[in-house]
Amino acid sequence: MQRVGVDIGGTFTDLVVYDEATKQVSKVKTLTNRREPEEGFLRACHDKGLEKDNVSHFLHATTLVTNLIIQRAGADVGLITTRGFRHVLEVGDGRRADTYSLQWERPRPFAPTHLVVEVDERIDHLGNVVKPIDRASIVEAVHRLLAKGVQSIAVCLFNSYLNGEHERAVERVIRELAAEVYVSLSSEVDPRIREFQRTSTTVINAYAVPRVYGYVERLDRALDVPRGINYMHSGGGIIPSAIAKRFPIMLVESGPAAGVLAGKFLGDKLGIPNIITGDMGGTSYDVCVIRNGVPEIKDTVEVEPTIPLRTDSIDVISIGAGGGSIAWV
Image (cartoon, rainbow, N blue to C red):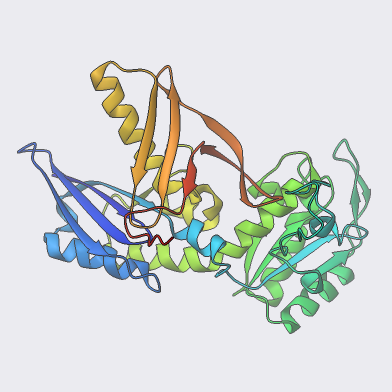
């Protein structure tokens, strides 16, 4: 049996195969197809002559989510929120990336204001229903977003991290009216206090879902590995395809996290607990600090200045100085 690992970076796609019988390691490197990243993945598998029934483990790390966020290449996202909270993404948490700059401009929200609609409902700070959700306002809100051509809808209602009943009611209506539209509920994506951070995280998940969902589905169909494909979680663990395609934010630091774990493995073997890892790809150079054998972890990734994404992640700093970078004086 074979164990297979695939990493798709911004420049190269790398496939490594470990043969459990012979203890031999082999690898294949291909160029990444940025428009269709699975193409390089499948080409590497073909070049290696992999047979699905001979694969015991299939692990995939990717920068797909990171790149589509950075490049703003995700879906048109609508946001449904509680009446009175339409401008949460614009107001933010009051921070500025550059406090004293007169020219600094806040980054555009991933769900622009014209794609944010409100519904009548209210849940209090204890999770009790104060005002039942109005179905008519849900139907109206969904129709407004569908008329504007959204592909994905984020639902983030006030205090719903304590009680997701109203968000699930909104999801049911969306399924009735437009089953093809992707839905992300804040009570599932990020059920934690702080309205702005929860809304931002849910919207970014909705922004990434259509592209990632299709990508994961195509890989599953093309490879049809009996045990399925597992994906590298930003925090260093692994998640199955079913979770990866519903919650793509968990993959935002997927590729860099795998590099850090490789550095930790070497440190453990050499008996060196305190390490600075450096992972140079073709596009970026990623650095992480490992203290006492444990990589530093953060619970929030700032995808752009003042735009938070709450998901557990290995604390990696990336700069655009990979092997394929062009420098000039």
